[in-house]
Length: 229
Image 1 (cartoon, helix red, strand yellow):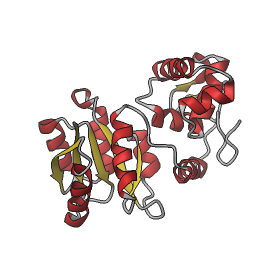
Image 2 (cartoon, one colour):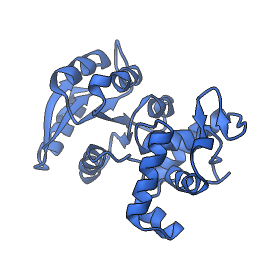
Image 3 (cartoon, helix red, strand yellow):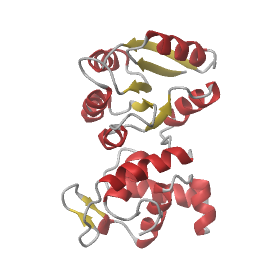
Image 4 (tube, one colour):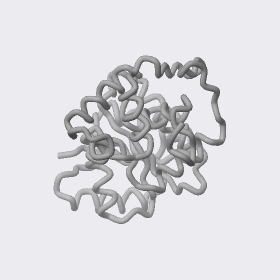
């Protein structure tokens, strides 16, 4: 069973998500939080696999809660999916940097909600939909950062630590491609691609594929709107 914590100040949304998730058969909702502070408390008490986290909540918002949970070594295994409306949440990109594993639109179809939970529970990033890739690129483009010898010294992204092949893989990860799609594009086996991605995360100290996307844009490896440097 995948253990899920719901964090949203709107009771109707929590109730709807609970019904949909528990109908899946392999998901158990272990708690509901009305703000970020309660989400952190329940995360420590329940140790969920996934948290569906709204951003705009009273007292402690979802962005700060995500940052604190991701920074807590005792909660390292918890994956966070940000609940967003895309058009209005200006903190989504910051949430990715803070450690969120992806996004979910609040009015998502039931199958998309269940898929999202399963995807992040497996340790993958919820970055496949094209709308998500466009959103990431848009936020990254708002504050272009300088690149100096493949390193952004302010953010500590040292791309000189990865090989040329790993740079190719990272650029494709940033475009939202799956391991299988990357393997096809670079004429590699899926296992080899998976190994490359694992090595890149280790070398760049990335929590998951979502943070690899952030690094790729912020370091200048990928230029928003083009997918290449």
